[in-house]
Structures are given as C-alpha cells and as structure tokens.
Length: 289
Length: 302
Image (cartoon, rainbow over all chains, first blue to last red; front, side, top):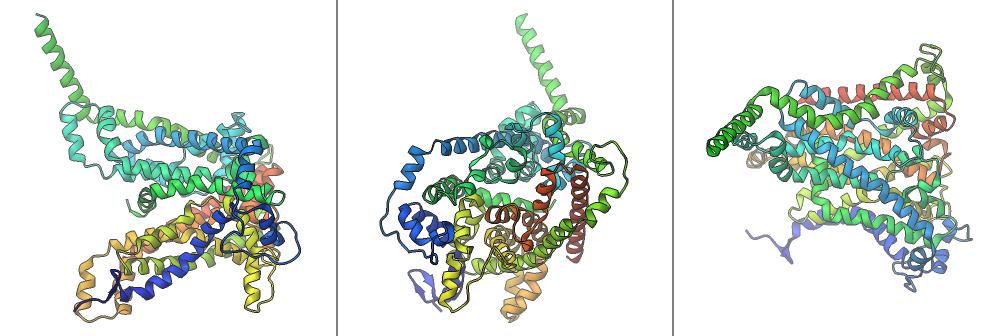
C-alpha cells in the first residue's frame, strides 16, 4: 500500500498541518507586522495605526504590504537620535557582563555539582533548584536589601551581579555536564590530570551544549529584562532599551517602530542560530534528578 | 646525576597528582574551589538577604521594634494585596490548564506530522525570544479602543471592546501569556512524549486500539510526571506576565490585571519595607508548598 503524497508531503498530514498553520499565523503575523512597520513612512503609520496610538480619529487598520516602503524612520533613528545609541549601549553594558559572569562563575560550580563527589552535594543542588524556581517577586526584596547596603543602587552592578549569580544557568550546565561519561574522567585522573585540567580539557568541550544553552537562555533573559532595571535604576540615564522603548511610543511613532525592530533583531538572531540549544535548555528543566 | 634527579622529580609529581585525583579529600577540596565563587554569590545576593527579609518581616520599617506577626496581618488585611493576590490566583487558575492543554495538543500535532513538524516547532518557540518591549507598540495598536482587534471584530458585527479599560484586560493578558509560553511547554511535552516507549504504541495498534484509547491508556499515564514539571514551570513563567501588563497598561492598570508585582512596586516606591518583607516571605512559602505538593502528587501517580 503506497501513501498518496503531494511534493513528498503525505495527504493524511494535511488537516493537521492546516491546524498548526492557523495557530502559527499568530506568530508569523507579529513578525511580519514588525518588519513592514519599520519600512513605513510616518504618514502611513499615522494613517493606519494612528487611531490607536496617536489619538487620531477613526479606527486602526493594517495593510499586508506598505504602500511606499521607506527606510526613513530607520535612518532617522540611526542618525538623529543619539539617545537611542545610549540606550542600546546601556543594554549591552547589562547583558554582556551578566552573561560572562553566569558562565565564568556558573560553569565551574556546575561541574562540581555534576561530576565531583563531595559531602552535601545533593543538599547544595537542592538549594540551587529552589532558587531557580523563585520568581523575581520573591528575590526582589532580598536583592534590594543587599544592593542598598553595599551602596550599589543606581550602578550597573545592581542588575549585573544578581544576574551573574543566578541559579538557573548553573542548573542548565549541571544537566549538560551530567552527559560527560565518568569513566573518561577516571581514565584522565589515572593519567595524572588534575581536577582543574580535567574540567578544562574534558568538561568544557564535552559539556559545551549545556554551556551554550545557558548562554542562549541567559541572553534572552537579560536582553528583555524589565523588572530588575526598573527596580534598581532610578536614574533614567542607565535605562536599557527595554525600559526606554515604551516611553517613546506615544510621541514618536515612526522612531518607536524602528527602535522596536532593533530591540527584536538581536534576540531573533540568537534564537535562529541557537534554537537547538534553547530547546536543550528548556528540556533540561524537564529531566528529572 | 641530573638525570636521576629528573626521574625522581617526575615520579614524585606523578604520584602526588595521582593521590589528589584519587583521594576523596582532593576531590572535596577541588569541589570547594570550583563552587566557592558561585556559592559566595548566591549567599550574598539571595540566601543571606532572604534570611534578613524573613527577620525584618517581624520588625517595624526601621528594623528596630519587634512587631511579631503584625506585618503579616497588615499585608493580609490590605485591600490592594487582596486584589493583587486574587488576580494572580485567578490568572494562574485559568492560564495554566489552558496552556497545558493547548501546548500538549500542539505537541501531539507536531509529532503527528513528523518529520515536517520542525517549521512549526520553530514558529511556536519564536515568541519566547521576542522581547516584550519590542511588541509593546503592536499590543497597544491591537488592543486599543480604536485598535486593530476592534477593527477586525467590527467586520463580524461585534461592538468595539475597550480592552485595556475593562475586565477584558484580564483576557488580553491570558492571551499574551498563551502566545508567549506555548512553545516553551511544547518542547517539554515533546521531551516527555519521546520518553514513552514506542513498543507500547505498536502493541496497542496490533491489539486494534483506536487513537483515543491509545491517548488515554498510554500517552496520558506516560506523561504523568512530565505534567507536574510543566505545571510548575508554567506557574513560574506566569509570574513574568507582569512585564506585559506593565508595558501595555503602565503602573496603574485596570483592576482586573493589578498583579502582585504592581503592588510590590508601589510598596517599594513608598519604602514600605516591613510589608514587602512579609509579602515576599509569604509568597516564597506558598510557592514552595505548591511546588512540593505538585511534585508529590504527580510522582506518586506514576
């Protein structure tokens, strides 16, 4: 019995594929909106979504394609809006040290929790898991108490340090290192390799998928962080793009649209190149102890 | 002579490094060194201040006078807290079953059309990577009184809805949460489905079971422990929905989407530290209790 196929796609899959496509439209449309929105002139934006965002009479509409594609808002954003660069740069100043910290501090800790035998390993791992499961609403006050005491309010450290020490990336890397076979480590130890040496030459390369998962998830988390900078930066000159963007929507529609795309693009790139590791990272939470 | 010295040295080095590698004490010491920076960090930023938070919850705002449980009582009596807690609970009660069902359905469909499901998998995961701030503008354009959603509804003869100004805001928030988290849960379900032995399915097919029977008797029991984890992770992601609520509706949204984080921010602005401490301690206790209960319930069922 041969299956009927169209372009290699079995007929019997078509109803399921249609159902999936209908739901996926909700995602595709959003991406499409962002893309064509940033290619529209200010006039067209005001004519289409102005009623919702700029208080213009009428009801909002949205075309499938822009009437007159233009790069004008993007150019204006890049050339005439120095604030934008400050905010963009602020975001990087938060994201890069946070992720570097997560990896530099977290990877050795994860290695010890995963592959070294010592007293209290289980208890310690439980502490990391419990911490990982607590939302910001729980850690907000404790973080504030320390940051205030150390005089770090309104400095980059107030956001970077709690991120750098967060438990979630450690847990993901633990799961990654769990896949490194213990026999290999024993062989290396018999050959006289030190623990540090084994970690560097065996652990890091073999545990790379876990490290990359932590990297991708950490980036996405920090890139769109809102609660932390909002709580610990009272000074708007430190604000990252994620806090600044909502403020400009009403006044500068064209700029806001273009800036939204710039906020979206890096996250999309990381997602497209790191999707495999993102999935791995999500799954690692599902794999039981 | 120098040659002998070298051999002796080499031998000595080798045996000493062997000893550290094999000996338990060496391993414990290495673990200490590896863990020290991370553990110092979480102690300083999370564990120690959390103990201080619990301690402060029993003292007045200045942290001097012992007030016992008065802080807790004042939080529980507070109307804003009741509203926020009720909204958060209602949100969780609606969105988690909805999310679990939707994402499981999608996971089954994606698996059902293997190997063509990949493009859909990517599509559903994508919202996870979309920063909330970048779609604020779109959400405002969609759910404004004169927004796109109403334009579409009008075509079907539905009267315009003031999404952000009425309790419809709650449903916008639910929709946003589902939109954002379905992919995440789908990945977890797919991993759970991969864990069910293929032999069971084949045996059931040989016995002539239909799709529904297979789902109820093989898939559902096979996913029991996954369900608990997905529920816990969905609950925690639910707390992040504040971002959407805040960005779309600001610090003082419609009552129906006034969440715990809004309240915490308010208290924080007013430096109402003892209430904040009591509320954070309670939230932590409630969450831990829920997590333990869910884990116990779903792991015993297996």
